[in-house]
Length: 291
Image 1 (cartoon, rainbow, N blue to C red):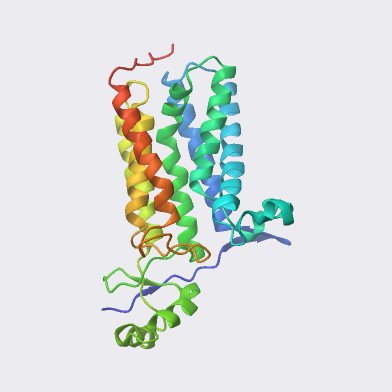
Image 2: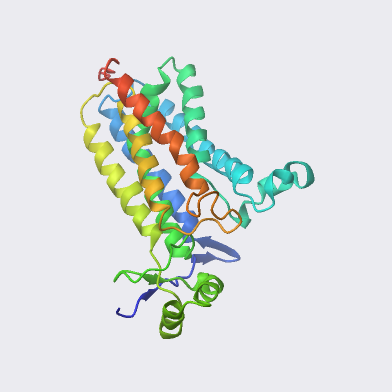
């Protein structure tokens, strides 16, 4: 194979005096900005019968839902020390600089925020979720791009022509190459094991593909639950599939059978919910366009 690309970017985009602005944080900010702009575009086209100020409140609550839900979920299911932090180190929840966010928790946070906001504005919660769902893949894709720039969440070793080397996986590369002549040869040849760029797979599937499908389907008014169901089904299937080539979190490893990961376990309910929502959408009403 040709010389693989080495994923080695400076995670700091720029500095403002002592303040370091990281690419990952910029991806979050850009994602929220794009969601706000396209959300206002959809509101103006009558997709949700609320004012611009009310929509701004929805996006603010949704942003809080992403941050709080994503962090809490990570600490409950992915934290290296287990859930013992609740009693022994409760302040660990707020150490966001150590990293640690979960999409599934962020999604739950957005759903709860949307439900609460919908009750205040006397809207059906799924009319709100259907409105927001086509926008979420923008943030998802940019988040995966941030993971790629950081050189984290890499995939398994492969000899595919687009394989890449992640310097952060050096210790893992050495452990895998031990006792495997083929891997050992690649390690010596390239200085690291070429791996699946699983972050780019997720960028393409969870970001680009999901956005394209959901946006096109939602160009015309659709039955309630349909857009939300498609989102849940597509994300669950894409995440479940990519987990086969993505290295699981080191603190968890595989949960069973040498291949089942926490990401796959948490994606199964999403697939089921998506199928149910699509089924019940066949008899659901269509939200008319607002004036």
